[in-house]
Length: 83
Image (cartoon, rainbow, N blue to C red):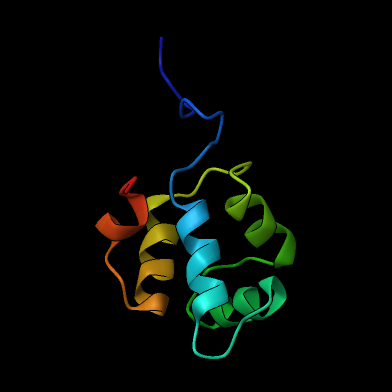
């Protein structure tokens, strides 16, 4: 049997860090503003997708993760680490 959720019931491990990065960005970003900026980077998303990622309700593909990491200037490893 494949495991598709973490022990905490979330569908991703990066959502909480993305939320922290968004709120700690030099100019605090709303979920809508982050979605707009990520669209310019090639990630077709909207405010609802960002909300679902941050709450752990949506899976994040490796391609999306790479775009998010590049935008925040962090590594993909940082986003998926659980520390």
